[in-house]
Amino acid sequence: MSSNQNNARGRVRSIRHRLAGQRVRMKIGMHFAQMIFMIAVMIVVWLAAREYMADQAVSFFTRTRRIDLFPLEGGINTFSQFITSLRTLRYSVITDAGKVILSEAIFAPVAVIAVFCSGIFFLEFIFDLISYSGEMHRIKKMFAPLDEMAASVEALSQLELSEDKYHLIEEKITSLEPTQEARLSFGDEDLLGIERAMNNLLMRIRESNRQQARFVNDASHELRTPIAVIEGYANMLSRWGREDEKVLDESINAIKNEADHMKHLVEQLLFLARGDAGRTVINPEQVDLCEMMQTVYEESLMIDEEHIYKYSCPTDPVYVMADEGLIKQAVRILVDNSAKYTREKDEIILSVGFVSDSEVYVQVQDTGIGMKESDVEHMFERFYRSDEARSFGGTGLGLSIAKWIVDKHNGHFEITSREDLGTRIRIVMNKM
Image (cartoon, rainbow, N blue to C red; front, top):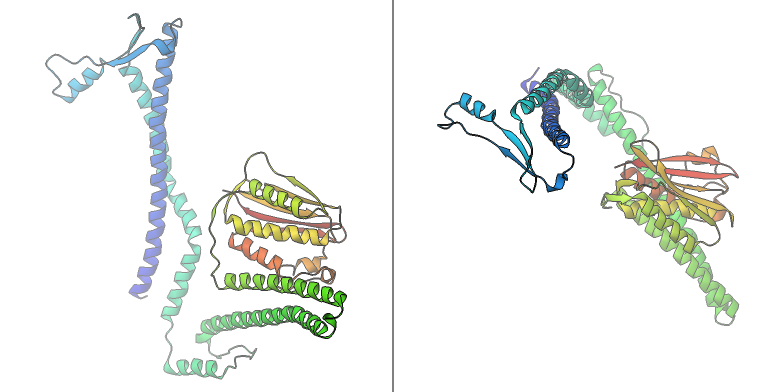
């Protein structure tokens, strides 16, 4: 094994030990702070109890309190003399009239409290030291992928290839056609790892190319339709529009609608393209989902009077770390879809809630046409629209945008849908 391999594994082990040691030190520090706090609280409670038993007639707020230390004659020159002097500590409580309510020697009780709390801290300290092995085990599980990576690097570094093997790899790669679906096969056991890795890479590249080609074809098809409609009405205008006002109005409205549709489609395409290229900036901040959904609810009431909107949310705020603008955009996409596929005067319910102690959700539920199970599996694919949904219009990109936004926030969707009964879509996110 080379020194580089030893260094790599040694660094991983060193990181594990440092993290485990840091965890143990944090526990010890926390328990030490708890001990100091416990000593202070117990002393305060004991003194308050002594005051209360000494005289209950005088208000606590009109009393004067002081701690007196009576020094030894000749001063303090040794540690034993310092301890002897501490034994003279007295806690005194005096009224405004000068009456001494309490004069209590406090060294012995404070020492007892300190010894008691220190004993508890000592036990916790022992348990913290013992927990080091448990912390190491947990961190080792967390670092398992790094260990596997180090092992893989070690295996690759030990692989020694002859010049003939290098020529074989070069020849196979050079002869592989870009559009060819065949896999690389070197026919050599020493090259199995390289063969498997390169075939996996080729599969991902081909799948990416297929998705890109499908996306371009679908985008071209979606843009071709409004362009053809605009072209058709423009020709009709040039023939009869100057003389027939009915044709003129119809053509202008149709061209305007198709232009708006094409503008919306292009904006969605640009959003996805910027997202795929990593140019969409996400600005996470503390967001109250209840306030955000309240805003969406009020906007929906104002914009859409054809449906009945309802809204529910917990009494306490529900906070997440998110880009509020993007999350609101994803929710609006769900609301727009529900309104599109739900009959007039039917309900659309917006809600916020808790999935568990660590997860929360925002939910849009409708009583629309619903979806088949086969359609649910493909609903987030770009330009996908079920046969039933095609008659309602749309671009087929809205849910793809919503999924991109939710994925970037480490969230996920939970979908329940039944034909003719409606659809419930839930965005689940990590709670703050």
